[in-house]
Image 1 (cartoon, each protein chain N blue to C red):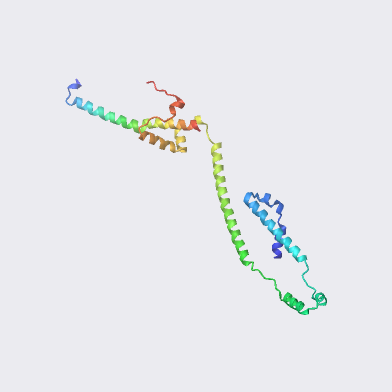
Image 2 (tube, each protein chain N blue to C red):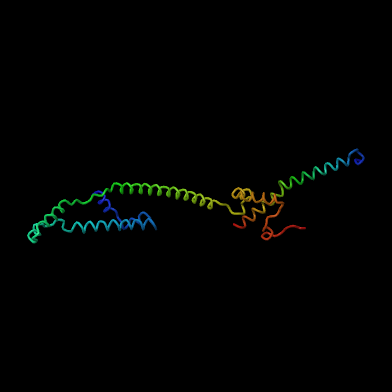
Length: 48
Length: 174
């Protein structure tokens, strides 16, 4: 059972945090602003 | 003097305004200038038609007091029309002309630049594609302020564009 490997849960926690932080960074920096930009562009075009 | 007069006579005053496309201030100034020219010429004409000699012998036979006539004749002969120095005025006119030409050329340059700009805009409009074919990148390239606004919104923690939901509705399932 992998749970019995020493520091298995420490490994879980560390990787969970690392992935969490990375996801937040990527989403807030790259993915979500793209949507905001798309919406802003749509709004701009519709107002022309 | 004769040369300038003949030049003034050669000008087709009636068609000058329409030919050069003059308008407003310039046309009024030109009409004013022509009126002054005509007035001056008429005045010279009227004055040169008047008699310029005095028959002193006639008056000498008419009046007893010969001293008065001799005195007047002396003064008449001594009279010299005052000469005006028009050189300064001509210089001022030349300076004004240079200024006018300079400003006209400046205006021409400005108008040319504006025309080029307008032509560019016209070409842009003619070659524009329909909205359906546009990509976000192209729109943002044309209007960089969209990117600036997005940056502003995101830095404030707003992930929605104000006015978007009112226009396009909310597709959120939650």
